[in-house]
Length: 295
Image (cartoon, helix red, strand yellow):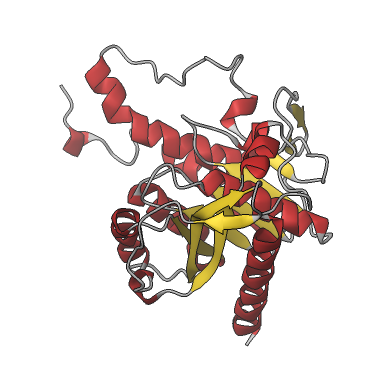
């Protein structure tokens, strides 16, 4: 019986070469992308996906070439929010061609591969214990394939909608290196800020720029009175880990309904000005990073 110490190299599995080829494809894709922005939070339910979708819409309306990768394999929403759910993926010589939204946003999501709304993503294994052990590795490999095998083409911005969890955040930093900039999303409560601060602590151990944080659901837009009313008790005024607040986005029922219909941002939505200002500020910061890189 052979033991691990008796196996030379990868034991003939050719895994090392496959990973190397995949990484080379990924780097070739990224060579055509000017900026990568990951929208993250250690907290679920804070609206990362709606922020991601509407940032993409704002930049597309400015005429920028935008792609969105839905990295939440178990709860994908980007295909619905950007109006491409149900589109067929086309495989060509250069890889998988992502469907485009009405605004021309290129989208890749697990939602485009699942046959129906109620189909769960299940990792098959002989036992549940083995399934749990392999799930993280399988998810990471699936996301690498999405990135490497999708024919994104030339993009001004590639947005990543990452699920909760500091480990996913660190994976993105590892795959993209310092090229990816991070934006944290929280809601105006001390509890949420406390959870999100853990992701910030993990990011500060990397070389990646953290642009700041977005305070989502910062009040409720009342259509009857035309004012923003507070949703949460007054939270601490201390900034999140010393980061700048990039914008405060009110909860707008009309915008939520548009996202459900795949319409995302429209100027009629009360939250649109705040989202447009957020996109403009992040875009300005990314230009500054590009200048630093050239220097």
